[in-house]
Amino acid sequence: MARYTGPVCRMCRTEQRKLMLKGDRCKSDKCAISKKRAAPGKDPKGRMAKRSDYAIQLREKQKLKRIYGMLEKQFKLFFERAQRMPGITGENLFLLLERRLDNVVYRLRFASSRSEARQIVLHGHILVNGKCINIPSYLIKTEDSIEVKDTSKNFALVKDALKEYGKSGVMPWLQLDPDALKGKVLAFPRRSDITDLSDVKEQMIVEYYSK
Image 1 (cartoon, rainbow, N blue to C red):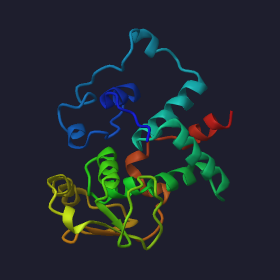
Image 2: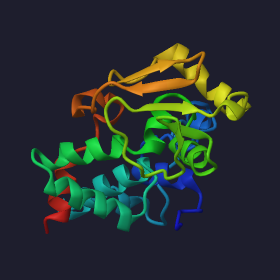
Image 3: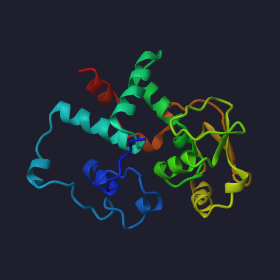
Image 4: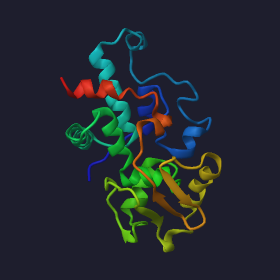
């Protein structure tokens, strides 16, 4: 399976936004954005120049793609699927991205980042409706139950990530039993539920792919 293996903090610097790619490090003083490091590149003046509409659309697409840890081919397939669904394409795209199993594992606080959640899923530590699913892009449905396998419940990685539940809880479309490490999908997410990505302009992404 193809995946990006380069420095992820460089991505945050490029987008000039915390993409939450390294979990707790992103919340610490070690974060490149917290240090206010400039975007990568040789020409600071060039980075400050007025950007074209295409450049703005491209940045929005790159930002969302990187937040969910996807490569271009897979991201475009999700967009094309969103186009075929009834309703608003941009909101449909968010719905599909949030329904990915690796994202749901992250949203349930079983992992501190989506990349960490992807590894947990790939290594077979997650059960969906009692069945082991090791496909990060698997789309969950309403009433699905997602839990950590009994043999994996004592992992320090999972326990450390779960501390965030006491601070922030979980999304309104999810339900979590922190003691049993078991969650449930109450409903499909709405765009308004995804408040941590309210700065993403999905219409720009629609316009980018419509060219």
